[in-house]
Image (cartoon, rainbow, N blue to C red; front, side):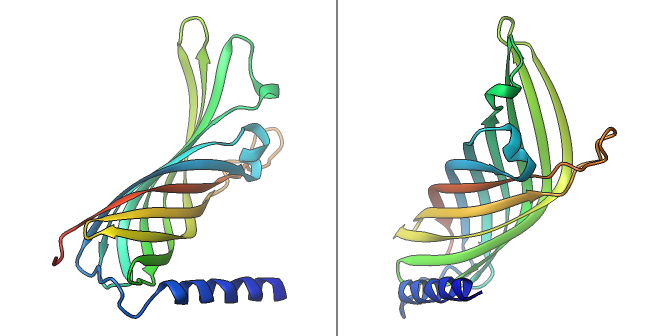
Length: 203
């Protein structure tokens, strides 16, 4: 508990420093974002796949300088671990999602620390590609999931931000395995960087 309090206090100090008196005002503006980075599998997903690539696209509207409502599409693509590969095939797995999001920001003059969360639909997919014919066989499941995280956006100009983020995504358990009765839990952590275009508002 003490360690968590120290970390929380540190985050408050950092965000307070970044959020200067003359803060940027994004109220009434739209933000379109695109970012890529590393996708780290967690829970049962980590048992069968390697670390991979994560990506995120988003669109948001700032209803106040500190609150933005939006939609986002996120995903991760991973190679299946060597011990689970099938001779003659390349196996990979992916999780893709579409969600509604809420961003709570502390806008500063040039930096915008924030926390973000959302809920939506997550599609889990495992695909086998024949090495000789490139024919594909896939299995998919769709479930409700949620995500949450934090980051900092850096204002480069009136219309451009550099975006950084780390988010945790959790997919609700799948249907029980008919043999074991266990429910698989899939999730991942994304660490990404990218750009956000700011539209509308006054110059």
